[in-house]
Length: 362
Figure 1 (spheres, helix red, strand yellow):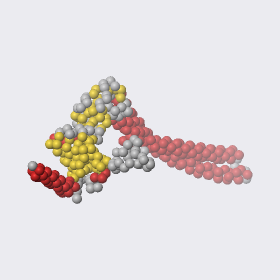
Figure 2 (tube, rainbow, N blue to C red):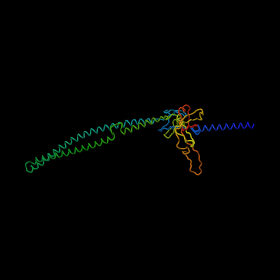
Figure 3 (cartoon, rainbow, N blue to C red):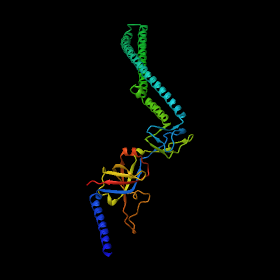
Figure 4 (tube, rainbow, N blue to C red):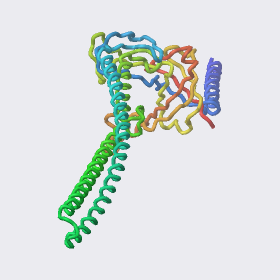
């Protein structure tokens, strides 16, 4: 009996030693090439939908848990004010263009007036030169007739006639000079008006005029505001956290709803720092979800390694510089990108627990 018992004990311990031996071989050959953790959860880059204008809600076209595609209508706001603003902007653009057209027309009128002023100035210059020549002749005649009068070679009447001619010539020359000066001043005024008008129209191109561009920008803003009364899905995904009702007055500070892009679910796997020596971006990953069990395998790759541990980014970071210090092994989040075909076949949702195994490169 003792011999038989001894025989069974030897067999039992032999089997135990053999199992440990096989486990050791497994760890050495296969286990060292992978690391795994169950501290992993699904995440997604959420899209929070908020209005870009303030307006009452006219209709809500989605419900919580509804799947929407990018571009689908989510919420429609009342657009009465935006329509009025758009019509005013259109009218303002037309009015501005008409004003610029009038300014361009005025510039052409100023140009014609300048041509006329130049012609008048040339004519008045000719008159001034002619009257100046006549004045010089009359001056010489007056001087000569003064000598003749002293010699009593002419009558006083004759001298008075010559002096009258001189006086009239001098008056005509002064009037010609005054007219020329007045016309030159008029030309300067026209030039100033033309220059001032030209500053408003620049290169005479209506479409590039600053006032027209400003009116166009106002029109584009009004059109954009009208388009923004229809709020569309920025991404594809499932609607959640819907917080909007018909008749509610919303502003740009209101969060209407959230969209979870389940087609782009990823996993944050929190590995112990001591296991991350060989982890690199691009390594292959196998994942299992508690939702579907071990029979469903997801495939992915290491997409990124976090720059800090979770405790370091917490509201109250760990104070490791205190006297009562106890070493705690930290965990570093590793972002895992899941194959989209696997997600399509078996959709995942945010916050699910995952089992993650990373195949390490040698």
